[in-house]
Length: 296
Image 1 (spheres, one colour):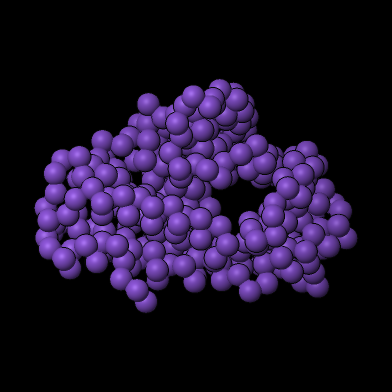
Image 2 (image 1 turned 135 degrees about the vertical axis):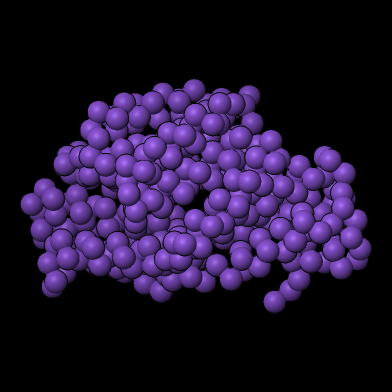
């Protein structure tokens, strides 16, 4: 395994400059896009190492104020990615730890939007494997703290509120928040520079989240067309997302009483996700298999 940019620079001396910040910024973008095509179980060792080396630079090296802000922001972004990947790999305690460490780095950098992203990412995990009511409170706090967030960032943070609300069976909050997501996303413009970490949020992703929320609220028939249309727009290399979203199509069919269609959708999910090292995906497949019947 080759040296990380942080390790390579600090080996040359304890004083680091803007060139390292640039390398780290470019590196986190590459790693983030790897998460599109590699499961968390395979990616987590690499991201852990990158984060640990970047944190060591921030703690042990010397740099000027501007470089420091950029380094702290890169650490915050790496922490968000590490938390996301760890959660995908089923390492929930590790994910929580790195998310919170990233919040500290983002706040030290003065990056409130990134701090909100980290907190809302943790709320998303909590909504899935913890207490959804606590997750909703944390997600709302993330939105409130990111007062200067750009439209797409704010839409993402609001999506996490909607999901936690749906998981809490808070119908009114879910519907209001989904409407706010639509309005906020529609307010985006080419004249507003968005952080790179929201590159993946588009209309299809918003429809998938809306569909998932509708399933939680007991409206699966409305959910299925939204998710199906979005899945059809995905390119084949996004295997985990395609497989995950097909499990939601299967659940929508099952909860609508269309068990044959549900089993067919689940088979398609299993086929799409074959070989993907993702605990999140494996858990979803097992959950939906129980719902549609053991012979699915």
